[in-house]
Image (cartoon, rainbow, N blue to C red; front, side, top):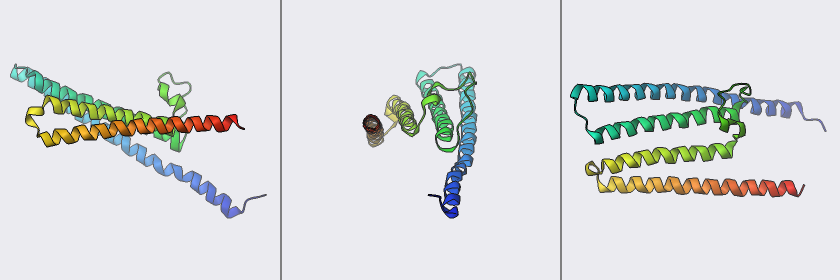
Amino acid sequence: MTKHPFESRLEKTIFWSRWLQAPLYLGLIVAQAVYVYLFMVELTHLVQDVFESGHVNETAIMLVVLGLIDVVMIANLLIMVIIGGYETFVSRLDLEDNPDQPEWLSHVNAGVLKIKLSTAIIGISSIHLLKTFINAANMSEHAIKWQVIIHLVFLVSAMAMVWVDKIMNQTLLLSKDHH
């Protein structure tokens, strides 16, 4: 049975529409450049503060360093979304001969990407929570409580995603065995 020309054009248009996401990934690259700039500004301030004051406040340094780690983790999250999302939803990246190809890219799919993203978000949330605990004397009990609750919600959500992904993979394996 041949398809109607309209249906064929519609399907090609729908498939082509994935390219509308490309500018979104380019925008995330710009956002990552902003994070690199932010990181360099914060690092410069840290070094200047230490050398100009001659006095080292370990807690203040720890908070700034945790802020730098937070920026790095967000940049890592951006890379996962940019590369993994583009590869999964727009077009394959031709990186087979590139020695710098990330290991995880060879087996990325929407489920793996969701789990990696949720893990990264938990890591970022953990850094924020650690900064809060270090600076607890300057924070309200209400703010600390809500940060802990939000972190726990991230953990439960990630576990739920892993569980659903595991069930879906088992279902796929069972359906392949029956065919």
